[in-house]
Structure formats: structure tokens, C-alpha cells
Length: 447
Ligand code: GLN
Image (cartoon, rainbow, N blue to C red):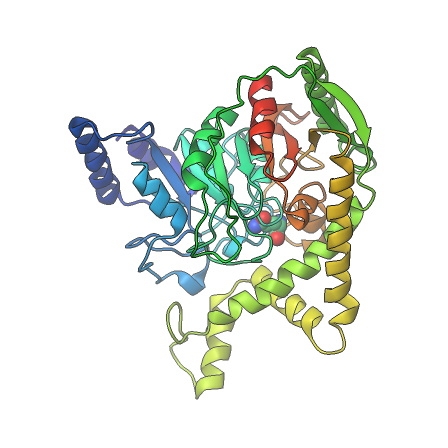
């Protein structure tokens, strides 16, 4: 009830939630109370959570931030939702997001931009901006999100909270609306690494309904939180501290590195020489997959359908013209182009080769260190509207997050200070494959 009251008071300013349904929330809360009374409650029974509006939840509108799904009530639960319910978490509502998770500022939502709780003139980051803003403003202690190219880490960084994107395949994609399937990965937002570990414990696990789910035994992500950092090797990729990184962000990261050294970590230089190629590679592969994934929104089976049309082809055209926003259309066009006959080899195949090279760079770097540290984004949160007319400027701001998704690695963001404009700075900690517990250990010791 406290959280619902806070949402009622602050959401009109922040626009962090698309859907709130107090009756549903209170029904789940009563079930949690009953479990507690019956002695069947688990560690997190009754703890509220906000779900990104990308996870299908039975009986809840699941819009994915799009007009296309504005009338869509999901008929089944995503595995993430099933797991959250099984743990007794109480759904607070559905968090705002960039349309189909495409964006870095949460200005691409059909439901309007989300505001950054630290400064209402600033973007919260994207695409999981509603989830991050909700936790930062105390509208939820936990939130779920997805990260295809940075959409958990970057809004966590811009909103001064903690967010973790696990190794590709750790969290099931079943019922999570697909953007770029080979990159999409669900993950957790909370104030601290410890809380993120607790939420990830609930979300993660093998799922035979997702063909790319990792067959990997359930782990306890809190297990190494209290390990000392003596002997831990931290790699600083020189390409992450080069031209393009704002001075105030660099200063906050360097101060954090100094603290980690005091805690006993050793710092080594590493190199990720193809960092710059992550942007062209990602912005070919992600739109290619999106153009295929989004072909299902055709007005036939569910979602928006144009009111007036003349035959089937016209119905498709009008439905998609009306249902999708500009950024989604741009991605579908780019994706269709790079996959088309005559361009496939020049763009898509080339991007896939670069993807492998980038993954190999990380493999080489992890021979010399346990975790890799760097900025999440080149600057702190920018102003609302500042980049919304310049898609390339927006894409360039993803430089430090995309490589992790191309390689399938786990990474998180923790708050480490403020920029010269008073907006939060996040430190990115990148782990080796299935190195979540180590990353969380470093983050927790720091926090
Ligand atoms: N900003 C990136 C994009 O627009 C990443 C989004 C995401 O991770 N969902 O594709």
C-alpha cells in the first residue's frame, strides 16, 4: 500500500509506469500474507516488483511501449513472471519502456517519455527507463528489465541504481517480447548488488521453453558477496578510457578504481581493440533480427488493426504504418535492407564476422583479469529532447555496452558518483561467461 500510494503521488511526474492495477496488486499481496500466515513464505514473499512491459503477464496489458500492442492483454505468463510469482513477489505494475526496447533514452515510448528522478529535465536512459526510474524514485524496491545493447546497465547508470544483465541464456526469453533474439537478455534492477543477486536468484534458471536457455544448474548469486577482493584482478580496457569519454565520468570511474585498489584488487591494463566496431556491427545485427521478429505484428491475430482498409495488403500496410513509431520503422527498414539479396554479404555477414572478432577480444582480455571495468556511457544523462532528432548520436552513446551483448557476457552497473551536472555516474563491471557471482562480489565489496 505504501508503494501504491507513492506511485499514485509521483508517477504523474515521472511516467515510470504504463499500467498500475491496485486491485490486482493487493490480491497478490493478500496471497503473500496468507503464505506467511501458513508458514509457506519464502525469503522474498510479499516483496513488490515492477515488471518491464515487455514480459507477458496473464491478464495484464503487455504493450511493449507500442501502440501496436496497446490493446493486447497477455493470455499467458513469461517464465520470468512465473518465477517471480512462485517466489511470492507482488506485481506493482508495468514499467514504461522504449517501443519494442529500441532506444537509449526512453523517449521512444508510445506512452510518452519517462523522466529521470534526479532531474526532471534529464532522460532516465533506455530502453528499461521506467524500471530504473521506478527503483531510483522509491516507487519499487525491485524491477525487471531487458538488455539487448545496454538497456539495463545504461538506465541504471543514468538513474544512480544497480542493474545486472546476466550471461546470454541465463534468464529465459520465453514470453519476453523479442527484439533481437540473439542479444536479448532479461535481468534485474535494485538499489544494491546484493538485492540484484536476490532478484536474479528468482529470475534465472534453465527453461526448456527457450531454445537458447543455458542448461546450467541453478546457482545462488549471493554466495560470493562477502569474499574479500585481495588478489582479484581488474582489467581496464584502454579503449574505454580514450577519446569520447567525458572528463567528469572518467574522474568518477578513476576514483572508484582507486577505492577498489584500497580494497585489495590489482589493476591491469587490457585491450579491446575492436570496441569502435561494436556500433556498426550491433546496428546491423539488431535491426536485422528485429525486422524478422516484428513481422508478426500484422494486425491479423492480435494487437492493433487499422479501422479502414481495402484488402489484405492494404490492411497490413495501414496497420503497420499506424501501429509502429518512427524508431521502430527505421530499424525495420534498416534490417530489411541489410538482409536483402545483394546486400546480405556486404552488411549482415560482415557484421556477424565482426561480432565474432569482438567476442574473441573479450576472451583474450579475460586471460589477464577476473573482471573488466569501465564506464557505462560516455556522459551522464542528457536532456530530454537533446538527441531525439539525431538517431546516430543516440547510437554512438551505446559504445561501451554493445560489445558485451555481442559477446553474450554478463555485466552490471553500480552507482559511483555524480557528474559535473549533478547527474549520476555508473561504473560498468563486466564478467567472464557465467561470472555473475564474481561481478556481484566486486560490486558488493565496493558498495
Ligand atoms: N540502445 C540500444 C538499442 O536501441 C539498446 C537497447 C536495448 O538494450 N534494448 O538498440
